[in-house]
Image 1 (cartoon, rainbow, N blue to C red):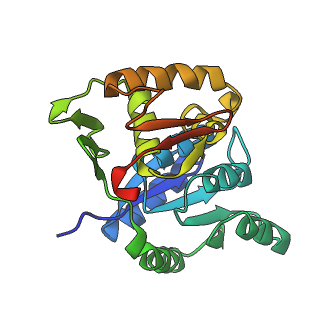
Image 2: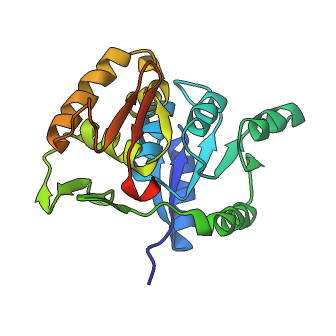
Length: 231
């Protein structure tokens, strides 16, 4: 039996999050919650949800900014929930990469039908919760990683960085994408901060920056996680 699809709900209103959790869990879905833009981006990177339900009125950033940041490194379907009912708002969200748009207040049956439709479209593209890349095994469910069967002792930030890079293996992930997703929009320019974490992660992976097995640097741009099966 396959694991239930996990849905990330990003909304600053706790009653809305509770309402959606009850409705979604009643349908058999797993639910992850975030109340801010920063938390939402971090959880999208760490938890790799099957769907993101995103409010546009967040306290620390506009939802469209979150959506554009997310689209820089993820193709996860996004369903917008918003009180903004103008056509221009809907068009802006769809142009920024949302798959659907529901105006608050909304009917739960319609909402669940939209969710089912988006997950049905996505079903063949789901990211696995466990990645095996050469001798490296990474498990998103319990936030663990092992090399040749030996556990790696990673901090939460180091694991989030490893998972984000590995789940996009073979693709360039920019410094800004990583910083925004894991540390939040306020740290989008802290490239030196990121380099420290990349160096620490390489040390724990036994990786060599000059001759990498796992993390390759694209100077001035970002990083690419190497996978022999993709070469």
